[in-house]
Length: 222
Image 1: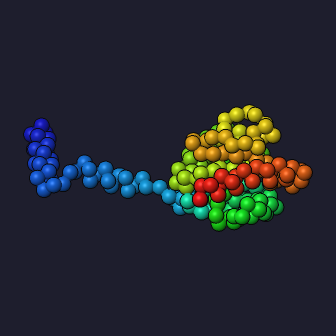
Image 2: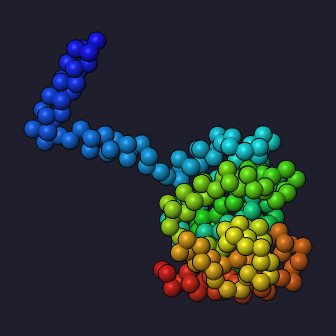
Image 3: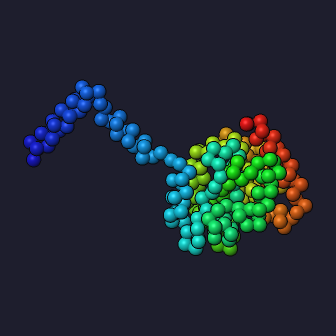
């Protein structure tokens, strides 16, 4: 047995020497192949989210909601999680709150095709409750990968929960909004969730103030 092992090692050594003489580096080729395997894309993330079973939220979902929009958007909107309409269609912000978000985006001279829209968690929490810590943890890598690929200049969080999660704070949204914060070297503007505005239309004025600041920075980045 020892002789056989010695022969195998000798043959392998000769193979490496031959490849080296031929200008081929065995280990570099392997590394390149490995890099190809780990190449990421928004489409890969979309497929992974669609099959995800990392947390309990997948048990009751109709469809996962990875997000949608421009792959290199300078502005990304991040909400809390999908609602009923989003769960049915598999798209973010398509219900009444989504229609209002569309109007907000259009108010700063953009369209949904110009931005990227997603959520902290990609599956609907039962009864639209807040996502739990383990659910956020399970979903977090998807959001991080999305932001790494998109490379936005600005993030606009929608609602208290999204802002508190990304900024890791318990400060109320009423005190967070109205100014830019920093998230992983990206400018982050917290503002009220469109669903909140449907219940409290008087707050639309404050959201408009926030979005005017977003528009100014967006235009400066183009």
